[in-house]
Image (tube, rainbow, N blue to C red; front, side, top):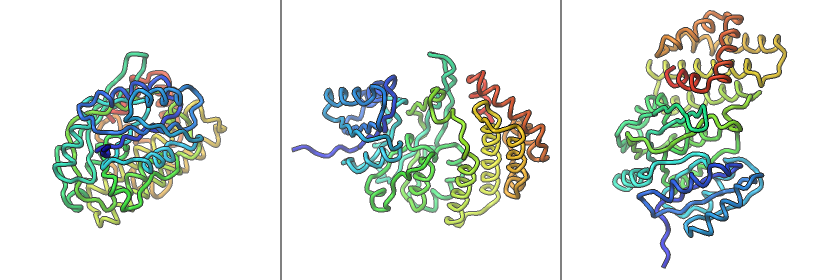
Length: 353
């Protein structure tokens, strides 16, 4: 009699023919083997869908869903509907993981009956075919049994970039089902999904080890594209996180400084989005938009309250704080140039901001 797997692994697949085999093989090589893999081919136009079918034919634990292109959020939600495991794990088709990941996550979750497990991870930013800069994101070794203890630690977990993505987490499937949580069909769906997950959660565990390799600098990645709505999306995200801490009735100086610094750092990214070469707005319109961004009451408040961790970030934020549009544009244009011409240097500067 066939029993349900302990973990259902869901992978949205879209035009990742160069990487999907490696992603699946890194799962097949796990020391923990009681899992199923659900590959959701999201209307790929390369050979990704055929590769998924080949992988499924060779391993009975692999199931394939073929859908018309609808985005990663819809792909993940369709995977959730088919999942049978007690826990859910989400992976991206162009990344890979260390062989002890599922064992350690499942061990902690089962031992403490956790609804969520969070781990550290690697960010591998490739600047050549076989050369990359590796950044480590560290998690504390901790189990938060009640909601309040997790909420009080959430600010530091956000600050360490641990609560944004789904791929460094193991989720109890029944918790998501009981709370009606799924990925919203929007760009950058990871954050609103995880905000819904942690809003009322208890029994959360963290593991201070690194398992997942998130790969940056794939040319066609969403992360490298100019987005005309980036500023509006960042404003929306800031409000979501602010509302979450208000819902938790947490409002101290540390949280206010974190929110201000987070806002200021992402404001720099929004300005760079306008000064990069893919933005075709006229120069005068670029200047107008940047002037508006750094002069809002919210921006002025955040820039005044933020306490940058490095001299570099203090220098970057200085012209914004002073409201100097010309220097802000020159500085941002230089950042765009570095981002375009030296992926290695840009990754190092970003990691140590």
